[in-house]
Image (tube, rainbow, N blue to C red):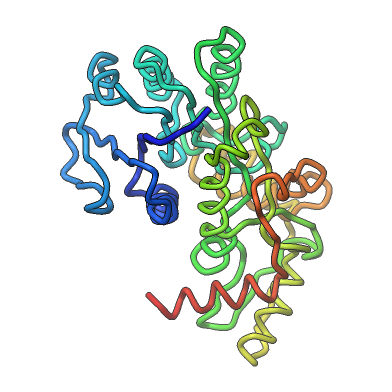
Length: 309
């Protein structure tokens, strides 16, 4: 299987734009950004073809995907609801697309911890995967997906990792020693591009690929790296992660999806007794050309990225 023409859905988001930037390094790829017909957005680069479609009408999507070899879905979080992705998959099949690259970019979405997260905020990725598995078994289309845990750079500088770098403060959840798999967004983008190479494709078809771009990620290791890299001591506050989990479960019961998602996301990463953050036993870095860096290297890169914005 050779993939020259690639349609990208969600090309202007954080994940999509990073992948597009990396794909453009390969001049042999012909990229098309599929945009909603009502969207004022343009393609993320003048080197990319733009095609607008009505995402509620399968015939409109079929027209957009006609002649494409692969569909790369990069829609974020809650936008990965089942019905919207199902019509996109069905349109890809009808258009004769060879490969559907699912928008997962998460951790182990089949874990019981992930199943607790409200689909209103994280989407229905497990159901989408099961649908793709069904279609692949029928011979209708091949699929793949990539998961590398939280994006190290975004979580550290603007997410719930517990660190305020500018103000030199840290919130440590539990012991701070829970091992996790995190990967920077640029590494995710490179892995996606490597997965689309002819030499790699046979190894990743009809399965999800797991990577980890940073070795020995724990909050305490990140804190030590931050203090070394900045030359400053951080003010540290310790928080009971079990209390956060209890409050998150109570938020679920009252349908407070936002509070529940934030609390469960933290506990899934940092609660040593109930975490799905460490999936090193599933990691397949070598297959997709990922060479994990140290926490110190990842922290340095993230801080340099902050100074560029």
